[in-house]
Image (cartoon, rainbow, N blue to C red):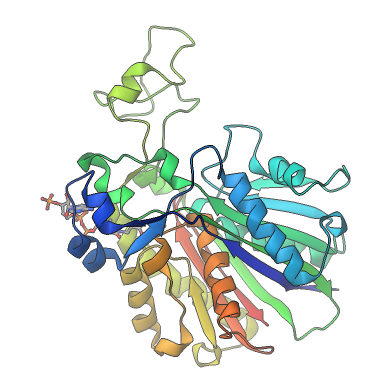
Length: 352
Ligand code: COA
């Protein structure tokens, strides 16, 4: 049975740098508060209309393909993970296919909706396709344009200061080398707390307004006109909401748990990890995980300080940056781990 390895990797972030002080001009917050609670110093924002999520993803994908020394037509499958697609439908996968100039309809495009865990979920799908022998070369992209959908008033500050735009991509290819590539992946979900980190409007539930925060049981007299209404907009109910302390508490428990699972599955131990790349949710979460696992500073890679939380893009951006910085050598054991909205979480162990 073949296994899969990362043959090429690349990332792209918009050139527009937005500092904490820039945000403080729009809402009641401060550089000191943001850095102390999240570690974030700045993030990137896309240029409206010019840098959509699929365009960021395409830019990252081109770099990954160049790094893999491959042409887009050599791919067998595209997987695109995002929570901030260009359109409600179709997904970004087909837009990326078009932007890469792929005309071969044998190259399907699959979209993944698992928020911050999207990249690890995508990796597990890609790995399974390659192991089954169905596909040889799969492009996996994680990309986000959060800046177009955030609340820049003080009301939205707990969410808005955290998120940034960007994209990362990998080409996963089949190999017969048994001691190389993805060794194990585990993915999980628990929908019990789905609304604790969510953007619930617009949706097929028919709309939620500020004066009725329950999703189910909401009654709307204007039949068929509730997908998005002016009241939702004036109520500010079209933005993401997050119970920050609750998310934090769950994240710091789930990260070490799922990392432990992939280590157990391979008979390896935490001391074997050369580099842990956690989804960049909050620097304080990553530091908590590092401390809980007893890892040294040189065993972890964090870059949330520069890019904020880029959701599905954060792991491939951080991994690509670590590779570019020479932090990843052939034979190294790399651990990727994610947690986010859903809740969903997962981890993967890779022998580079
Ligand atoms: N600037 C200034 N003050 C802010 C603020 C901001 N950007 N955001 C929230 N506050 C205020 C709150 O209004 C609250 O004020 P109050 O005490 O007067 O009511 C106070 O800070 C504390 O709010 P709280 O939400 O308890 O803060 P916190 O210490 O938990 O930090 C987060 C908030 C969002 C930084 C933190 O909970 C967090 O990072 N959680 C995890 C989020 C995450 O990782 N999400 C992505 C998952 S993939």
